[in-house]
Length: 153
Image 1 (cartoon, rainbow, N blue to C red):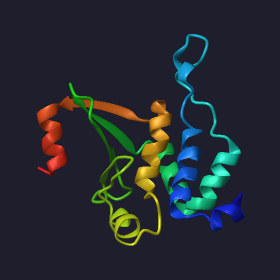
Image 2: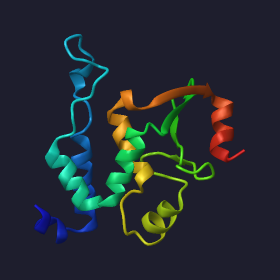
Image 3: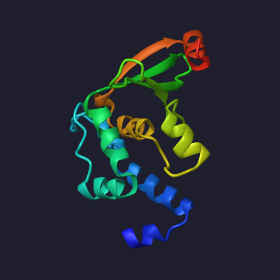
């Protein structure tokens, strides 16, 4: 697998990462009474190893964000639009992120300007908490407040 990945085109790598991330999503029947909705099954070791091969320390940092519960899911009501607020280790280093965007400098320089990575650590953390809702707190806010938040006001 790793040798094939090294030879893969960027589109193929995106497909591989999407497939790996889809393996950490809860199964469709996770809400049935026989399953435990409060605990997510462990991420398979092979998935973690492959993600680590692709992302390296970015994966470690993303998992640290999730483990420390430094992430808040903000949901607009009634539309259901959402964005995630990630607290930084320093007070002035907080970011907003989604699966497709982040306000951090790494995203700006290493994902957008000179694509050296598919995601920053904040985006990868968002992918994880999307699959593990017990790892993230949720706050609903009115639509108007959400619009101001996104606009940076």
